[in-house]
Image (cartoon, rainbow, N blue to C red):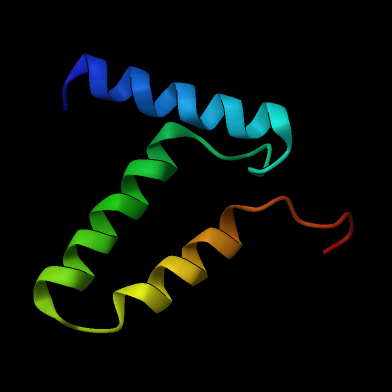
Length: 67
């Protein structure tokens, strides 16, 4: 993966964590894991890619304490 792409993804993750839209545990590796999974879902037509995005985004959001 290109250094520039990793840096861009890292910037997105850090901004999301800073403004509270992403969970504090989120990493750029998680972001690319989700992108890869989305590519698989959409290419192989093994599910509804829109629903996959909904589920993935829900998992990236900060979780309430104690959950």
